[in-house]
Length: 398
Image 1 (cartoon, rainbow, N blue to C red):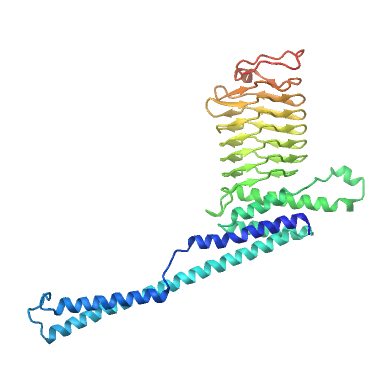
Image 2: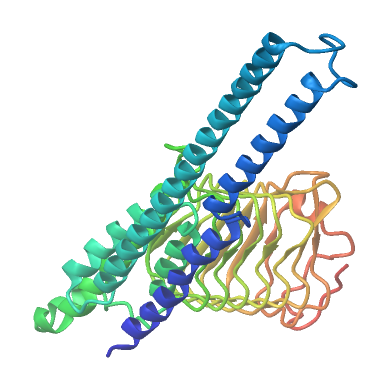
């Protein structure tokens, strides 16, 4: 059995327990229906006895000192009216209990159907045929739209698929040089992964149905190899992790996206491709610590950092291009580049918002290829002096 199928079946086994636990959590301790009806009958008898005693006793009857037959008859009739009312209450109780039982049965049936759909979608995702995997993506996404209790589980399955081992296909000119049949499996897998990312992004851009969007979900792409994604305008309210992820090539657009929760690229590897964070709003913590940039391009143009912790500390900029233009952080905020190795990347800071942030370059690990800072950036880096090209390894930083 392929490893991906084993992983998906493990996720399915875990998710299958969710409906049962949720249903048990909603259930309350109830009396059996027969006991409930018997209790109501006892109450009715007690009420009848009390009415007869109150209305016919010489000591308690307010009607007359010595009730006659007509009074007794009216009293009995009144008592039977009361009993009839209690009988109606019993009937309503039985009907209510039946309705609750029917609702519970309906919920269990719905949970069973969701579970069956989940199993079918997971089975499709584990197929060796790309067409079946594509169908599984749409089936799992549609299930996540409808299944409130299992939406996060559906998201976890899709993210787990993307975390599976994957090597991006070589560029087209290299593929054209050899037999195309040799690259068909990896090209098909690339299409499957792109479709999966597109399905996720589509549900993060708008709210077609209140309570049925994926904005509140957490997304874990830890260790995934991604070669293209378009999250332009997406809204993330949960946690987003790209820790240890690899980006070998392709285009990644987070323009105008909003991260309301924490987002992390800790120890991610950027070896190619282009990243766009143009106009992106990071309202939670932004963790870019110990990331490795050796190729491609990252654009942080007019990006807003509002979290308490925004850090690029410990990162290695050894190649490629990194542009920080017009960025701003929280009031009296700080963009930390402490212990960063500037040894090959073309890093530039331009048009930084005055008074909105502070740049920190304390204890650089390497300064052989220092960043380029214009006047606005230099004003936000107290204690940093313009580097001398002849100085290769040291700089004062705050």
